[in-house]
Image (cartoon, rainbow, N blue to C red; front, side, top):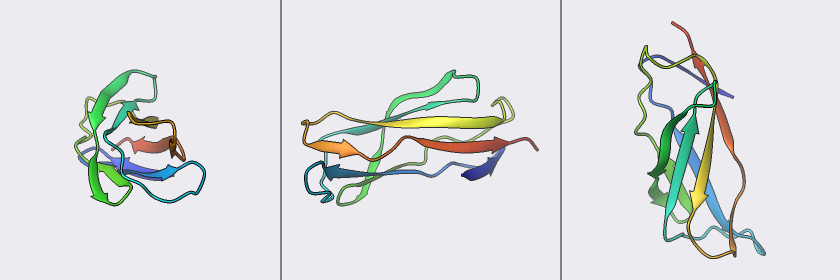
Length: 97
């Protein structure tokens, strides 16, 4: 699990694949939701940026002293056909100073 301190920008990356073959494929839209350690939504359905075929990243969240330390969760969301799948939900840890 990646660990980030206050002032850092978590790097969230997801691979989008065709379910039957596992081949990376572009989706019409990929977004992510980030929840802090209490379950509060910090980022709600923010667009992820394509970096390569089937690879999307989100690096627009900067951790501040107002954020609660602990294990945070993030979920990618694809608004596309059912043949596209996402492999995982992610977690990262926000460390106190």
